[in-house]
Picture 1: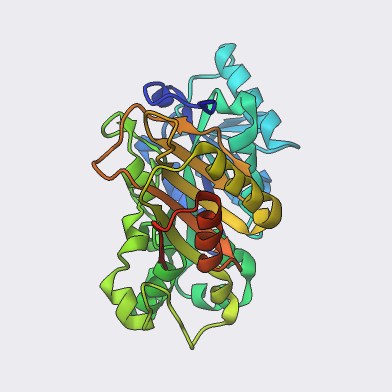
Picture 2: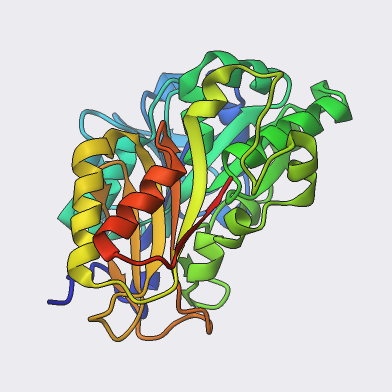
Length: 368
């Protein structure tokens, strides 16, 4: 039986992209957002925040307001989460369809500094009404260049925010020496090799560097799995990270940082031969049942034996987006590649457990 397909490659551009802006307390989210809403590229964008008073949108950007929404001069609409995020997003779409608000082409959700991104990602990936109208674009995590290293040492929430990011955004870079900033960049590359890192001097960053991080690539108006998956970042660790951390096959060991880092692992499993559907789903179900809370993020392109094209999966802990069945492979590489960000799960356990279900000696792992 073929799995249900939650999104068609030719229809994904019709779904409104949703980006999650997160980062620890004091990491500069407010400054970044204040600069972003001034950009013409973000006109017709809805900004959703947990509590309006926390975001501190500059007063000179406010054009008009009502009980729960503020219209910004740039054209962005800012609103608060009053209760459940599902209700907020459904309400926005109902207003849009009903002609009570102008059409919008992007949503940015800003979280509090202590927030775990996972519950919001669960909502966006599992609610049927939202899946039909919105698509997850990506997680943007702000990191304070001046205090980020110490925060990663002390606060596991900060480490998790960095680990699940699709884009890492380094702020307050003017406050640190180049060597200290490079050390932080090296550390972030080990924690999350697949996330491109952008610099935001004084909170300013071109929107194109942090948005459009999802499966759909607006530049080519199509699904771009390889850009989204970035499996090569895990299979071929960069030379500078390898040199600085004395890693073996990308597995880094830092002796000058808190041991929090050792709990987070980034890796890519590759399977040479097609995987029987029953074997893959049995393995995935077992992983979710036994270690779901520690599967921080999973992305993959799969060669399932019973399917004609590749299957794309995306999960956060125990929740998975409906899989996407593509018509053709994006390249000649027909291996299944699954990228994991995990907490306290050894890569050997993942590799060996999959081999048990597939009985396939061709399972390999590249670990970072």
